[in-house]
Image (cartoon, rainbow, N blue to C red):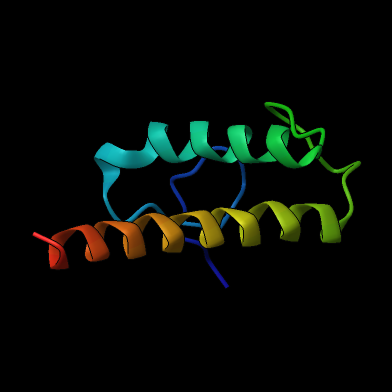
Length: 77
């Protein structure tokens, strides 16, 4: 199966808003640092799938919290 992947890291994840690519990448490293996962630029094959999943899951949690706060602030206006 051929991949239509333009991401040089080999990841199949796609950024839906290309302008947000750098911000999402920075966010990933910020979250990894915050939770103590030694994520680094380049090869990270030494990390467990649990560590990688924790980074992704925590990113989603933080994004949902930010959206909920934004929605609550709009409702309070």
